[in-house]
Length: 244
Image (cartoon, rainbow, N blue to C red; front, side, top):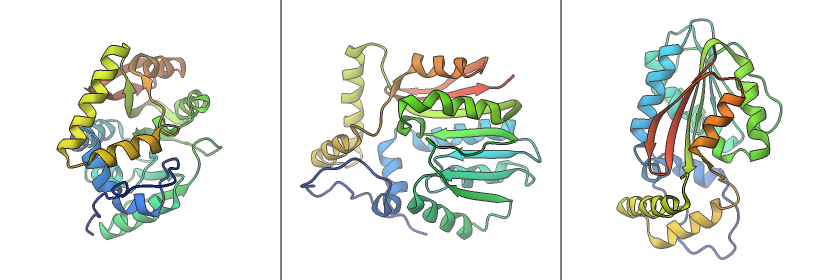
């Protein structure tokens, strides 16, 4: 299955609206994320490397905001077949694309895809690993602590939460520079000034990043006694937290 090129913001949008993971974004998402997220392939590799280390037979691995299923597909060869994969996303279009990719790959393990809003009630049970890959930044701040608490309670002892996020720098001076460097990165990946500015405007009220220290504080307050940063590139970071 070929991936469509990300042309979502290539033309002038006369009536700007908040970013949505609809059918147009879903079809171009794989190209979008590869060109928009620095070291995305390496972040994926690090996530699956760590998640597979903690996977336990007869438990579940959850991918919250599973999008098109890239993380689950990458994880599959490294994890015992007795581990069930559960992908949750609030976009039906993303889940449709995800199902197509899982079926094309002939994924044979037990798996389930659920259309659910992370702001609302949904279950996390018997989880050895929970993954949030560029997902928490789209959860409204007022709900983030509740979501982390739900994850903590749904993990088995020794279970792991792996989270990658766009972040803010601790110092506003560095923040301005890091954003500038990030847009330079996007230009190197053939995004035009129009695409960069229109996507920035669309994400302004939707993607709300926290500082690295704020993310660590949230994880510890949710009950995770072991936390670490495993990736950092300017205004992107990866976190791992283990339930004792």
